Image (cartoon, rainbow over all chains, first blue to last red; front, top):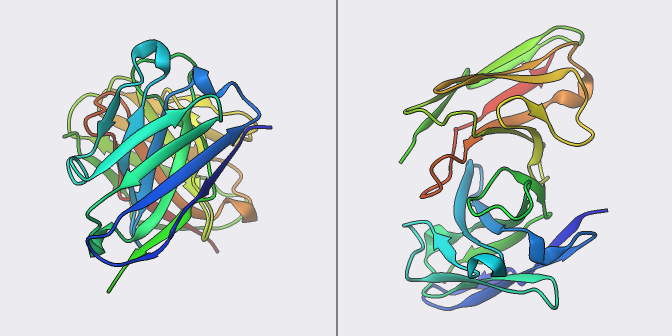
Length: 125
Length: 108
């Protein structure tokens, strides 16, 4: 069974950093692009970024709203994707979800086939 | 950026009836369109990808259609468990990936 578990969320002050982890199981982690999404309280879904598989250089793309502040990495030996969030702002407050691509070995992201349960990040002084 | 617009914003449907949800893209996304269901306090669940392909374990009462800029999600014989917010998402242009604002489905 495919499972994704996010961790690392919590309450953090503006300007500080936080690193989220997404641990995958039940599939070959290194075969899939992994993405991060977020959902502010009472709002819709927003794409944050994704990381390609190592075969495609493990390259990343991030949304304009987080570019330069957030970065994504992966450790395939541990089946973990990371979201490093720096210079956090109050408008980064959201539930953060990781997602596994629907398609294997895809250079462009496809639909989010599986999602974790999410982890809440609250940025407040 | 491709803007995704969903309608209606809210839909109230009786059990056993059909619900029809619409999603429009500001430019063609070919068939790179997904539909998700999200219930309160839960993560989104993929229902449809490639505009019309049901994801694993999704009941046959869910069907997707359309291509280019106009898409529809139909839920036939609506069940009590089909409540929630439904989102469409395009993945043709991944800078950025974009979602519609959602349609909230309520069971009468």
